[in-house]
Length: 264
Image (cartoon, rainbow, N blue to C red; front, side, top):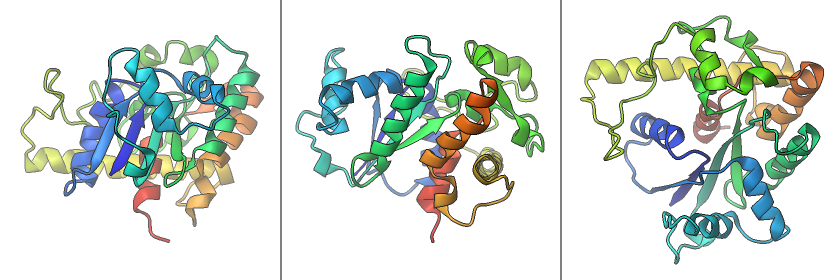
């Protein structure tokens, strides 16, 4: 059983339903949990036990405070062969000084570095909506897209004007029924082909951009380690955050797919 832990309760799980349809069609051995709080809240909870409690126990306790039992009481960390976490950088967060935000995220990336042990953490820069930050695919300008801390304070509205080509998420997501939370549209061969082809391009753009951020080369990396999450964070901080208070826009989901399916 694979556990996917998402920060948000709507966008990420809805997006993941498309990913499941395209990339995990033949198995249902997956469990999805929506934490509902940011990465810095998770750090606070993990830090209260000096990181001695596993993430499943910590998150289950937090979810129980809002009567959410999406992780069963009898579920144990040993029940999951792999654990993946998807959270946002959110460096516009004003609850902590920027230096402390970065320090906490670094510690989380170091701790959550292996999906078969503590779990593997993937970070969106600056947030999950990064996947929408493209104009007509393939977008040759994607390599240059950044966002300042100020722009991130209203990022969802900012991207509407900054990336106007696609008026909705239909180009990369199947429509989800708000009540059943399942795909509601007929998945015609044409629709499947469109979304699948666009995902191939989105993956390529983000993978190559990650390599550019880390290694100054806009091509596929030779190894997964060339664009690991710790290295991406360090390079984001050195080349963008500390330099001009910005981030290079990057989505975690294409990087997850690259790492999960790439054979080395």
